[in-house]
Amino acid sequence: MRNDLPLTVIGNLVDDPELRFTSAGVPVARFTVASTPRSFDRDTNTWRDGEPTFLDCSAWRQLAENLAESNVTKGTRVVVAGRLRTDRWETPEGEKRSRMVMDVDDVGASMTFATVTIARTTRGIPPRETAPDDPWATASRTRPTTPPPTQTTDTDAPTSEPPF
Image (cartoon, rainbow, N blue to C red; front, side):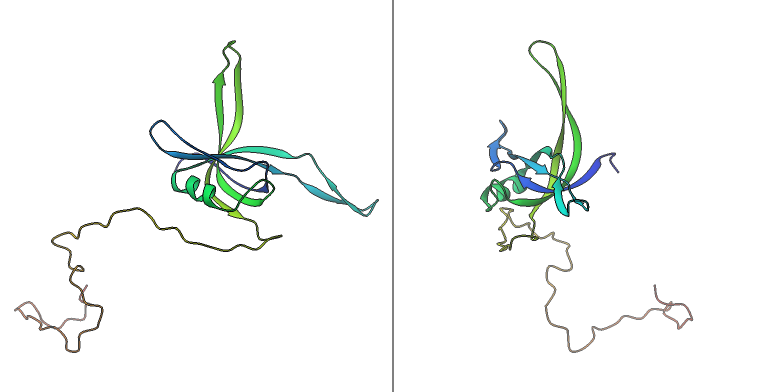
């Protein structure tokens, strides 16, 4: 098990997700989620917003492409699950900088204030060839009507032990 910091964030997209490709051709979608805590003030009988937290997120590969093709835009309420990590770098002036970034494992539209229509994607995975010794490759989908013939040997004597 890795020592990742798992995290689930519910918030609104600050901007539309931006799909880009690495130099190796790997898709990555970057987006920011703003999560604002709300609390009820009993003295004034109103809801009060706290300070928003802005979290930069990165989704990779198929998730990135699905996110870019989905109808999630600026202001959409989302549920984002992933792992928190620290991104560190040095400026050209030599100053060390860091920020928290979420490597996203999954994104979903929040259905608290919206409805969602699901559209499955097809994967571009080529079919695998069947192994030559695969006993299931020639299996029938129907149950045989007669049991297969059994072979008996001298060691096949009834015992009180189960046959496994």
